[in-house]
Image (cartoon, rainbow, N blue to C red; front, side, top):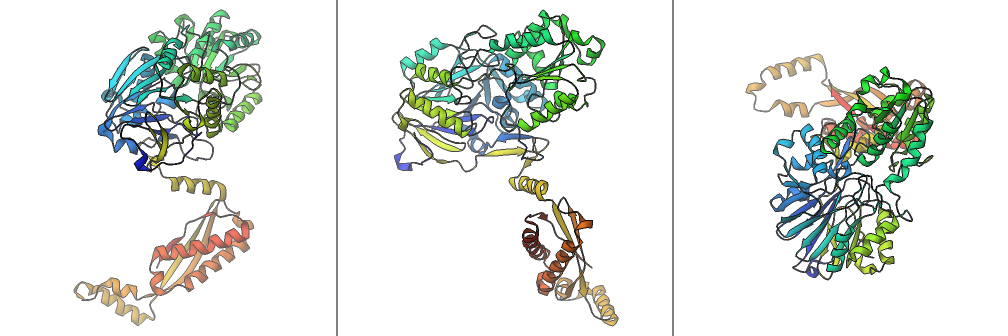
Length: 595
């Protein structure tokens, strides 16, 4: 198994394909893979990622695409595997900087179009609809689309025919033998590719650590049916807005148990509408009501589909949990089903929602206390089946944290792929593939993450995020320093004023005269927020003032005239003092005024 040991440039053959993961290796989400030859580049998926609790003020995370922008004349197209946000959520951000064609299935492009329209990118987007079995020629690449089962319809894997051989990029998949839409994974095409010869497999690792085979999406049907039968009040079903196979089962059961269906949450409303119009969701319009009208019906006559399965603060379920939703309430005796995986990092947010719902008297079902969720990703046996069908010469795991990638590499080795032919890479690394070798060459310097604060146009620098984290942990201290000019007696002041009045004709600039004026420390105030309680820390604050005064007194007159020098010296002295006294280091922001 090879890791990130770079090879030398003279070892690279002329005939090669570069593989550059810009996201999706070492994390869940942010999926974006670049395949490059000497003349052409194609991109597979453009996903985003939601921030975790240690990223205050961050709203979205996108892959850094400087690598593509600098080579945009080579980019031939973007290929989308399916319509989940972690694979298409950054498409509008990418298309703002790259004017290239996009290829995806009908449902995938329909879902993506909503976000493109929201950010005024749809009118210039070059969207090309493909179907499983289609092949698209893009420069040195030929892309064949292969149907696979996942938790959303219209999901495809992609076989790339390149100058060095065939690369199969699986996207997200599992082998569901009883899929909700009746469409099985195209095992025949996968087996055919394996018999013809696959140079490299790049495969989903999300569930690599789970033993066995992932159950069918249909496996939760009985549990949800039982919950319908037991629920005597309102029933809330919370899931990902793009989990359309899951939503289809909820709708079928609502019809069976004669409950009307209300939908809340903008993304869920849009996806339900889009999927229904395209025929991917069979929803009887006679059973669909506006969520604003839900209170007009008896509680046992209503099922409410909601967003917020990951505890997102502004989601519909979060608002209901806090009793802040404008027209929906969770009340004593209601039932809430959270039918989604608890993504690592979201445990606390989801736990908070569950606690608030329990305070409202609701009965809660989630994946840790009931079989109300099944993954859309293949477990170890699914992954081994994919490896055996394709029989690749080289293998690289993708999609998952580093531990998932390593476990997937071990599975590949267990089915006969030599360890030296397995590459466990990370975001930003450059992998060079030839017909005989697969090696990590180095790292792309401009790869990484783009943090967005508010609008996508507002990119957050790492230093700002670090300051926010420090503020949230240790608070801020603002020393306000007043420096007085040392101008002598009144007659001298009158002379200075007269000199100022004639300065326009003087040979020596006023600035030079000012620079010679002495400055002495006057009033010093210390303001603290989130660090200490001022009224109970008088001794600490007085000592900080005295330290600040001594710092000023030890500076030369020239240094006192340089605001940045004063700030740096005060900041350093107070940082050392507070660290020693409090074992905490607040953000220190000195303010210097001269009078």
